[in-house]
Length: 239
Image 1 (cartoon, rainbow, N blue to C red):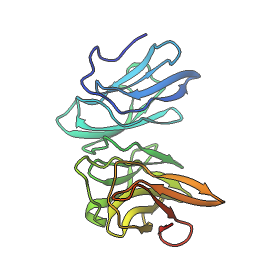
Image 2: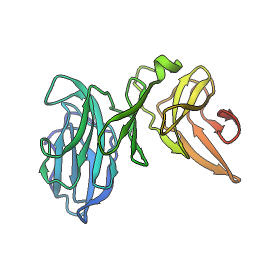
Image 3: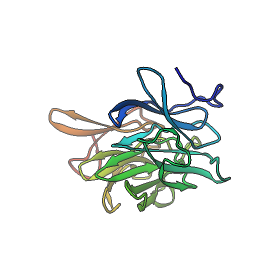
C-alpha cells in the first residue's frame, strides 16, 4: 500500500470518491498533505497525485467522466495567492501537478463547500459566500452571486461550508439572509428563482426528500434545528 506524505500536516474532511479511469478502478480524495490523489481501492497503488496546497484539502472531489474538480482555500504551492478551484485529467498517471491541469482559477477560496455538476456546468461556493457557475470544459465563469453583499447572508466565522444541490432547472443554496434563508438560482442564467425564510446559516447542506408525493427541501438552519421548505408552492414557503 502506498501513501501520501509520511506525516500530513492537517486533518482532512474530504470524503473519498470511487470511480474508474481508463477502465481501472480508482479512489479519489483530498489529502491532509495538500494533494488530491487517486489510488487503486483494492491494492492501495497510487495512480496519480496533484500537489495543490500548502495545507490539507477539505473539499470532496467531484468526478465527471475523466475530469476531477476540486478546490482549496489555502496558499498555492506555485504562488503566494490564496485559494483555487481546478479541473484535472483523471486519465494521467504519476505526479500530474504540471501535466494534468485542464483549467484552474486562483484566488477563489473554495475550501469547504463541495462542487456540484449539472449539464456541463459546475457550481461551487467560496468560503466567503460567493456562488460561482463554471463551464465544465473550459472553466469559464458563467455567473456569480455574492450571497453576503447581494442578499445579506450572515457568516458565522467558520466560512461558508454548505454544498449546493440541484432541483429541476435551479441550484439551491442556504444563504442565511433576511427573507433569504435558502435561495434558488436558475442554473443557466443565475437569476433568482425564489428565496425565503429568516433563519441564520448553519454549516450543513440541504437535502431533497419526497413526502406523500410532494417534493420537499430540508435545510438545517439556526436557531431552529430543521426547516422544511415546499418549493412547489410559493417562494420557498415554510411547511
